[in-house]
Image 1 (spheres, rainbow, N blue to C red):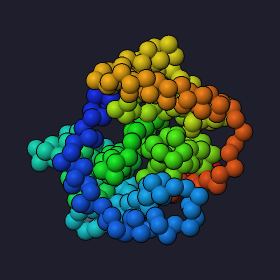
Image 2 (image 1 turned 180 degrees about the vertical axis):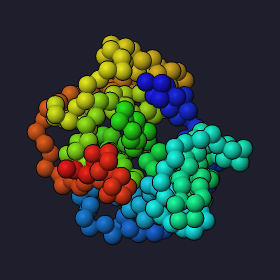
Image 3 (image 1 turned 45 degrees about the vertical axis):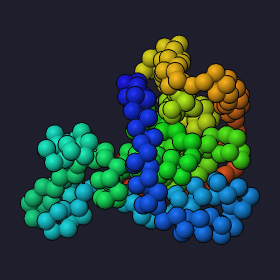
Length: 296
Ligand SMILES: [Zn+2]
């Protein structure tokens, strides 16, 4: 659970006004709003939600998913992973904690793939895996004035939730898949089993596993800590996050907590939703299958 603590400690970085301004300049706003206005498929949703859908569609075609880093020397895309190494000084400047090495057999050379964590660098490279996608999407959504959660999953995936003013609930958003309000995409679409799904925002931390795991056979055992310890940790992180809130806002938040608890409790072991779900779109077929996320 150290990941949760570390995300919670850094979550306010997504409210950096300068970075959010930069994002607003970066997003093709006219195109996004036009696309939202024309979206017949989602005409039942309100404009705010349609804007998020349009942003996801644009981002999916704009940002690139990287499985194996292509060879920097000859362009060969069939490189072989040689594990991670320490970032060099240049890579460290952009918040890189690990740099992957990809070997090209054709020209017998190595290509470095730094896992950048710096917004500006990522807006430039426009590439990565779910960590980079979710990192940038959190900023982009916030720049549009959305209330956003960073969602951590114990089985190596991250995504977002966005507050819908219209529906008065948190909505699942996965930028890698351009998925909006499809929380069962993992369990039913990818065939992914999960133990923990935790939401982190500047309103605190919440266990939202029930939203994503609604069948016992999609659940993995929760062994990281006792349920009592987890509840205590999330409560403490939430208290920390709300330390500066005024009393009225605190009361509002606790009402929202109760309402979400009711929603989350209603999901337990509910029948499979009828929403149409897809196998994983991000990542190559081979990579997806190696993770057991191809819906098979
Ligand atoms: Zn090569």
